[in-house]
Amino acid sequence: MNYDNDNIFAKILRGDIPCFKVFEDEHTLAFMDIMPQAEGHTLVIPKFAAETILDIPADQLIHTMTTVQKVVSALKSTLGVDGVILMQLNGSAAGQSVPHLHFHLIPTHLSNLKRHGSEQGDMDKIKALAEKISAAL
Image 1 (cartoon, rainbow, N blue to C red):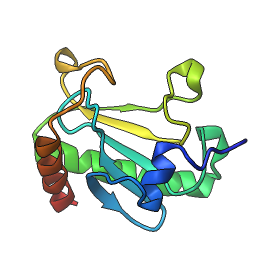
Image 2 (cartoon, rainbow, N blue to C red):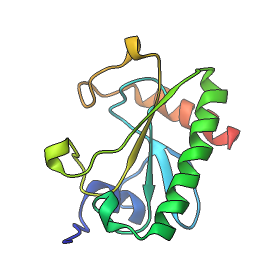
Image 3 (spheres, helix red, strand yellow):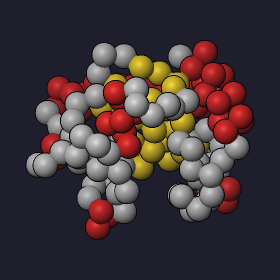
């Protein structure tokens, strides 16, 4: 694996680029997607330098999935939705646009789902929602 230390998520992890943080611990970071497919669209990434799910040790993946569970629970309680889509893409051929392992958590009813990357969300609304979800964690 040739991990790109200049990808946008690596820059977010280093603090070079800001994000609307929802949760962080020593192994993971969860933050709002600024190109949301639905209100509350959140990303969870490991702090481990992995491009795809095949590049991360199992112990680090366990930490990441534990954070995914916590954030899904917070999304459901905060937004009052019954379902959360969990999406994870591996490689550009599968649609992965950032070469750092990440999980999309999309609270929604399928009829409300937008195409990812089709439009940038309202930054004030995204920030406010990040604070609300973070408080639930």
